[in-house]
Amino acid sequence: MQCRFIDTGFNDAFTNMAIDEAILQNCRVPTLRVYSWNPKAVSIGYNQNIIKEINLNYCKKNNIEIVRRLTGGKAVFHDLEITYSFIVPENKNLFPFEVNESYKIIAKALVIALKKVGINSEIKKVPEKIATPICFNSSNWYELIVNNKKISGSAQRRFNGKVLQHGSLLIDFDYNKNNSIFNSNNSFNNINNLKNRITSLKREINNIINYNKLAEAIKLGFKDNFDFNLIDDSLTNGEIVLAKKLREEKYSTDEWNYKLVAKTI
Image (cartoon, rainbow, N blue to C red; front, top):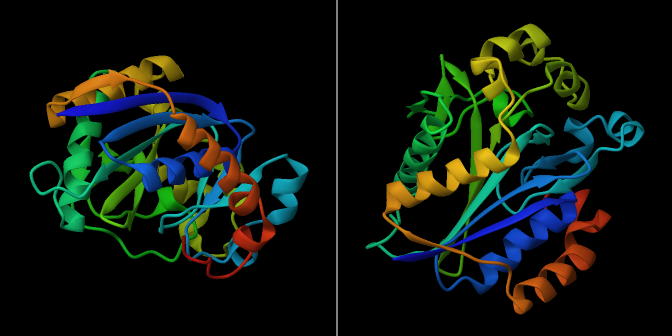
């Protein structure tokens, strides 16, 4: 089975989310994309309350963009990391329909990817229900841990017979900034607790793994896990046009980002 591999590099938050949706709407074959964020940004889950959970003054002062994702889950500060998105038509011969099983099979690909950069990770099967706005301070089904600390977070959306899962792998993690960005008086969100629950590649191997090396590891992890014939590709003209439209008319607007419950696509 062929799978497109697209590395779109560094883009602003609104462009990144627009590209994910543009690929999702036009998806005909499996597509794996890797990317990162410039400037730094916070992405909030589809149903999160941006005013309640994000320190807007801090983000404005520090030039941190804020965007609402198409997917659910909790908020992520995108700083020293790489983000992947995997978009695939629902096909029982290729990808499981059942939500938990689909998280599990992608988690296996990420385990292989981390192994290729010297990190031994495990899959945590059962989610935790914790009162926190921070994605990396809680866990969903089948997320990755290293030394019992979370290193990757993911979220899904299903749309017209297609699945989008995107998630982040932490190259490094700034505990102080994460503590400042999110509004919470809960003890689960203090710096000491974040250090006990969240790790990064740098923390585990005392070295920064660069974007290109990690992108290649993710590519090979998906190739090995799914037995894909990965084809290096770029966005189609249709995806570029749609992404620009979505960026301007949806993801960069206050109507989308600041409403309590975002409208559906």
